[in-house]
Image 1 (tube, rainbow, N blue to C red):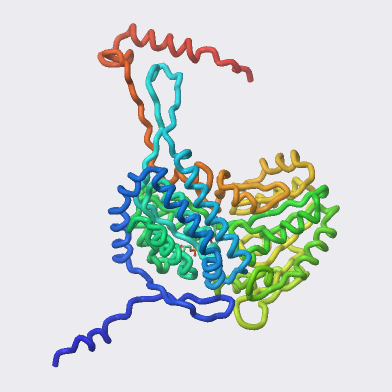
Image 2 (spheres, rainbow, N blue to C red):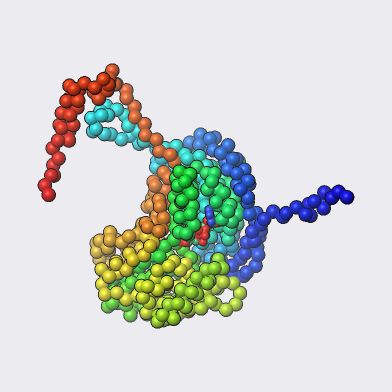
Amino acid sequence: MTATTSDKAAKAPKPAVIQVENPSTGEIIQEVPDLTEAQVTELVERARAAQPDWAALGFDGRARYLKRMQKWFLDNTERLTRQIHEENGKSIDEATIEVMYGVLASSFWAKHAGKYLADEKVSSRSPFVLGRKLVIRYEPLGVVGVIGPWNNPLLNNFGDVIPALAAGNAVVLKPSEVTPLTSLLMAEMCLAVGLPEGVFAVATGSGATGAALVEQVDGLMFTGSTRTGKKVAARCGERLIPVSLELGGKDPVIVLADADLERAANVTLFSAMHNSGQTCTSSERVYVEAPVYDEFVTLMTDRFKALRVGESTGFGTSDSGSLTFPPQLDIVSRHVDEAVKDGATAVTGGRVKAGAGRFFEPTLLTGVTQDMACMREETFGPTLPIMKVADADEAVRLANDTAYGLQAAVWTKDTSKGEQLARRLQAGTVTINDALANYFALELPMGGWKDSGLGARHGKDGIRKFANRQSVLVTRFGMKNELHGMPFKAKNFNALQKLVGTLYGHPRDTKG
Ligand code: NAD
């Protein structure tokens, strides 16, 4: 007996899917395909075919599409905000901040891509190149892969696609399997703004889908954990393709005795609790100089107690949304429980909030020590340990005592002292009397030191990484042969030596 077509269909393995959950309610909201290697190959091939025409449009041609995106973000803010909120669990207010970033970034890269990637003439006084024209120029890499995390479904996913497109690349985005829906909405946006077919695609799927993408692209932008980032970087190293890594953090805050404590408390509250602490650049530990420690703890306690935790239904309805990713609840609980077991005090919160969804009570920890997990490992949750220090030197020493180096904040009314301290901190970004604000200055590079990453987003580095650099040397009026040309002649080398002596033989400062 032969099997019928419908029997075969019934027996065929079902395509793998990923269920996307609303973390505030626990409800499954959609399924997306878990793409196989072959399906990733198809997307990359389509991108490769579309890229040359996209590059040929030039900066102005591509900027027109970016400006249409900017308008789309503005026209569809509410829909996009809801989508981010629904799959990530962050408040409506915080989801809107991501959309505002989309507006800023599409406008910024439309305006600045051409400037940052313009041909640059350089001059040299080297006697070997006298009279030559020297130019640095850039070419798109080809197909860029962007792999993103779940904590910012727009900002750290499509947000990094924008400069890659502006540089003339085609892009395949692999969003986190936890929050892929916002990226699918970005694909819809690209269709709506008329982006040429194949220039942008979304590869939904798990880590294996991401790994398949790494195998095929010409350059990679990765945002995620340090653990995965190191694996991905190793593979990019084997393939010798450029990779930019934005990884984890354990960002310190230093509060000096002369700080404006009220502003320090308000801004640190936001930087620690924004997105329920699930931000790579969240303030994860605070060192306060002894004379103002008690006052600062009181200010923070009042603010932590006043936070409204729960499902956000509109602007101003909740300050702390749900944790997005189930294992985060375990990590946050472990950091708090271990600290308390070892002598710390949870001045507020300390527990998972009862009821539906994945909410954790905002938790302020005092009596912590530097060796506790809550002071050393990335917590990525609504907690903030505060520690008393004797002085700024001790604060700097402890702030640097970490594998991470993403961001740091210093609070002092003496801003020159703040800038001096910034120079001693091992972090890609330091804010003085502020936190997080730097992310919205797209002129300013943002990237980590140590285990927090390699390379940067934003600024000229944030787009040049999506291009191959070419140096061009043009000789317009050359002699028939060079002084150092063959056959070698003693008189030529004597002349060359003399020239080098004349140009470089009198270093001004040889003392010491
Ligand atoms: P993750 O490393 O678990 O996953 C990130 C992405 O990598 C996901 O899309 C995942 O599917 C993919 N992936 C997993 N294994 C892979 C593999 N072998 N090859 C290729 N791709 C693979 O990180 P996460 O939990 O999604 O994100 C949270 C982390 O991201 C935190 O550590 C946070 O600090 C960091 N983060 C950093 C920044 C920054 O700018 N520095 C911004 C946001 C988040």
